[in-house]
View 1 (spheres, rainbow, N blue to C red):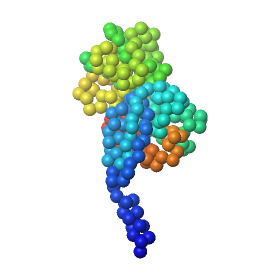
View 2: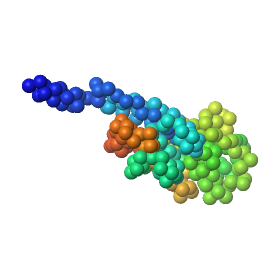
View 3: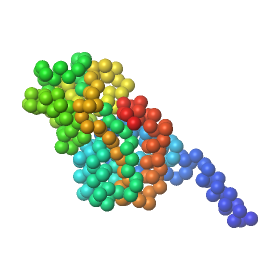
View 4: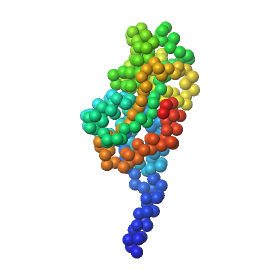
Length: 246
């Protein structure tokens, strides 16, 4: 009878909603373009599972370097596929855990004027902001756009480089740059989204954003649960609504 009661109590606990169970903390390193979506996803995940996400944002290149230097991240959400692939090959990830959680979209945006196409770059009269191509995949995509438009040399003297796409956005928003290449997700839901020109996808390589569980997450059930959640219809609908392709 006693064993039966114990089994019944365990069954009840396992069927309780997530937030009533003891939650774990998951340390997530994410590319800065994904700040707004991930903050909302973290709230949704916490309400459903009881697990808390501790979020660290930065350029993918900077986060990758921190991981190599022993930073205690458990999940890495990069703005490209290259860095998670490198970590896999270096044996620093949980095998089979890599996913593509979003495909980024690039916009040319100004906080002070409407931009209807790339012609504004041919007669640029101010600073042009882009993320550092050496650190940030969105910056590399922006550089490819300028190369394909044959405008790299003509505009390079006007460049203002952000360490990541969040800093690049701030340069434009504060008027320190006349215009800049930003992530579509940064303008999602804003009225001044109309000031932006959606960059044609054939002007740069696809911005495939991959996520992976790092070796520290090997026995972390909450980490695996978060990766599953990222692929749920609920999460994907929010990611799409925030300006990404899937």
